[in-house]
Length: 475
Image (cartoon, rainbow, N blue to C red):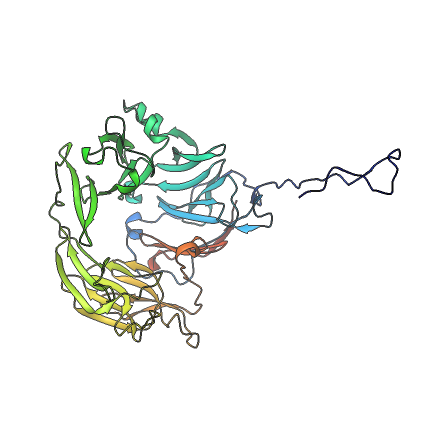
């Protein structure tokens, strides 16, 4: 309980002046970035011009990062000492777009948007008053000139509302909101876009819908399917099946042709409850369009008393094969990722004890089409990037303190190391899971690799790019 403003001492006559405590003062924290955000625009064009198609697929990379970026710190009323900020990257034509905001260590309003050209020079830097949560840009090969930037707009104590803004990739200038842009096309999406959340996305499509906790009214509410390259959209009805239900229980996805479908679960398998085709929703459970896609993962609902085993299913949920000898390690972090016709999986080839410790952990390359083992590497390997025939992994067991090593790139067709692709520092591509990924993460943007280690961002380009190393600090 705070002391009273005036304290009378028993020994002091009431006719004497009362003794008072010193006035209390509160420290006002000047929230924001340290150093503060300062907008800028480069005066000349980038000195580097790379063929965008050469950056589309992942493979061997330059041993040294082409660009090293130092992020500002942040100060907030919740954490007056400078804290590490959080960053998200997305690839854009001729470079990378970074969004920098407060981390979970100490919230403050505001973000920095920075377009970094391939030559390591900031194309432009813009200061945003609100918090940027997502960025959507069409594939760089399509030469997009506009980004969809999602920000949380503060509502003065109420939950923030998402606003979808358009930003020029050329100079960072604001170009209004997506709702305004669609209104010019005759689509009245304003009532929806001020509250809508991203539900599913592909490289070129973005499906928006109601936030969790909203009861769906099919006579009032809509889904919005946005074409990212053209910035056009279509308002879609909700399926009648969803009427009166909480959005939280409605899982919408996009199929290979970017048609929405509503997914549910039955017997531990995903099923399509309703599918949208030809301008209407199906009347009952449906199957996805014919697809050659095979999904490999550990079972969601394993047999009681047994560990989750590796299983492959097709687009209709039919089981194609299973590996009872390769089970989930029941731990956080990397599990599985596709690379061509190889599925890279981290699991257990031995037995799990009561503490989920595995006697024979391994990283394996499994043939996706038939479930056969192509290669296997012993130990709990760290895995930071997988795809297009390659994987970035540790050459040591991450959970054995007596082991030592770094990172290598392997050919996922053989499991063998790629010559010249070795980094001795085990922290080079460290990727933590869960909350730790906010500060240590690796992003694969086609053939560009972005490694985040707290305030330090290292951007690696494909080996054939031959770019010199450049350093810059934001803002």
